[in-house]
Length: 217
Ligand SMILES: N[C@@H](CCC(=O)N[C@@H](CS)C(=O)NCC(=O)O)C(=O)O
Image (cartoon, rainbow, N blue to C red; front, side, top):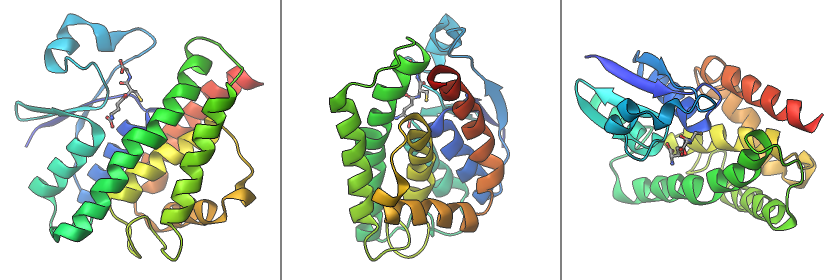
């Protein structure tokens, strides 16, 4: 079962896949890509993934990209049970909603703040982008009302993906944690209770923090 993963350690979607692999007890051959060196735009990489995003998984010749699609594929093919992504349609629908929220709201907010900061050296975050990030935290806060995790009281793929993006957004756009107590407690819960969190999410987050700190300090 040769799994190849094109990856960037500081990238939140990459680290969500690292965590999913870890929970599933899988190993992938890591193929690091440098966005700074524009290796995602080489003809070789574009042949694999014309959308030129990272992560991309190649499973014995089968290619799939987008962290959410990669994780649901891995769980479906290699998961020993369906706890991360239940087969029950309504439970699954809630998780899917959170995954789309990750793409459409959390990651978009992060990208709009971090890309200009890290790649274009723009230190000012426009007010509307700050507001969008606050709106994203506020929505997470609501999803977590009465729940320990994003889709109920057990961690699922929704938490794996969203916590990777949220903790990165927190580095790029620092809000007062007391304004979002549910989010703060959820992040801590994920750190404490999702096995493999520290080895998979934290090292790349530290690199990301270094990139952001270099621009902000
Ligand atoms: N929705 C995608 C987002 C992937 C994405 O945009 N990754 C960034 C790195 S964090 C990237 O590859 N950027 C380069 C590009 O889009 O050209 C996922 O979850 O995999």
